[in-house]
Image (cartoon, rainbow, N blue to C red; front, top):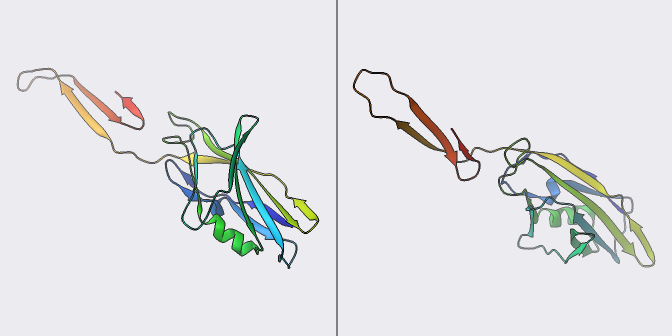
Length: 170
């Protein structure tokens, strides 16, 4: 029997984190020979990316009730073995999204672990995440415009700050 526990990582805009930063795994049994496990991740915000790095696989992807479900699975594993798989599953928040920014949002998800060992099965508790996404500083372009003026006379300046990620602020 495995269970997940939510962790509270610092999530930054456009920055990937691996699944082991979001969840830890514990087991109430010592013998995992003959067992299998599966973790289902769902309810990620639109535009979030989940991908397997070398050495891991997302075994199944399906849509149910309009939500995409990602399943990562394995066999005969201790919690530390599952953690090593989690270290190879990467989640990236939606591009340019941060909490309170122009593209406002949080990194949300639900995760559930299930396991079987022979005829016995266990469905772990569904564990939610609802994490603030911190903004990062994107490269900025500064434009200064001035009307033609004579030397030593006041003139109005227009300063515009912009970047391709967050738009323009005048």
